[in-house]
Length: 463
Image (tube, rainbow, N blue to C red; front, side, top):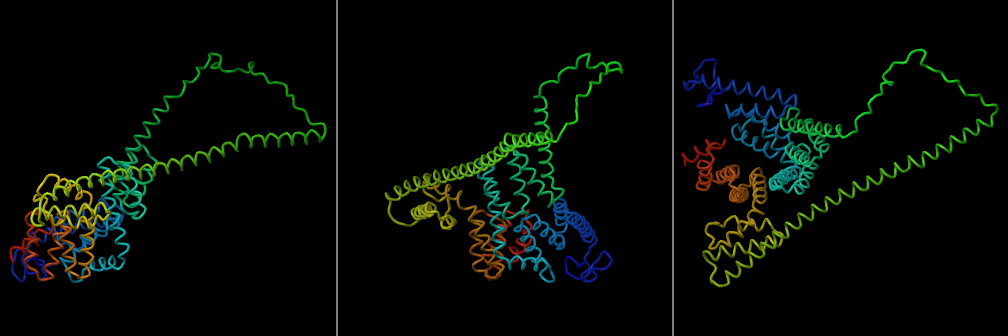
């Protein structure tokens, strides 16, 4: 264990042999942090991933420099399908301990399989989009997106849970149970999965209770039926069976049996088979109809949104036509109109790129602000993730100029603390002190509870 002040190795005493600093409390907190790390390691080994995450977060809350706990937390997140969160933990760990840190190996493994990383980050974007659909009550669109997420990233537990919750709400309990079983195979003590399972069991029990009461009551037994039979009451009928007199009767019986068997096949088995095929056809037809209906809902929603944007854009162009010049507020109007044109032309990234530098409060009219908000709501969340992913990719390639440009755009889209932090780190690598200080200052001002706060505060105070 090293001293938190001078970095020298500590002995058994409560003071640092190098600088003389009192380290008794520090050593105790480090031991408590290691205890929670060991608990998290045990839970991860028995696939209690939810419990492992809780223990490791407590370990890091006590000692944020515990790189073993942070690296393990990244592995647990990766096992749960959240590769972006895992990568962020490893990057922080690498910054705290640059030398001899296995987190660097994990980051390189992700970098070498860029296609896989882009696919996984794409599924996370689709999950966030599905979550918004679900919050808005558009469950059909949420189901379509979540099915794609689960197919492309089977480890993403939160996507399974959200889709299972929607299925439970729609009373499709067998599908929900299948998804929850997949979650419990990955994380056997997942709290939400067990809660949803209990809800399914309650619904099934309620259905059984309803159906059991729908049958007719049993016929009451007559008194004579209840009376036990005695030996005198039992009458054995005389047998009427006779041995066949010759082989002809046997042959006739066989032929009659064949005819009866053929009739049973024709009247019972074949109709049942045809009925099963018909039901399968109807089921497939219903699924196709549901998919078509969902697609129509999405198309109608997008068409309506495009019509609104076109109407608002035309109004702005009319407003711009009565004034002259391209500076000041008019320039902002031109940018909003160009963004609307890109959005209508199905170029959301270009539309978002034009919006990021616009101060909505400086727009000269309410109609301009309304159009800005409409396009921003539709494009900025996805654009923010795209800018962030591109920025982080270039950051890991040490292409800090492009990384800083994209991370700044990502921060302007959604004010993410991660975007601000890595934008500042990129500017530090480029020796652009003022720009780095600017984005570190955002963290100091707005994210005082973030894990980046101390580093940001130290930089701002020292530069």
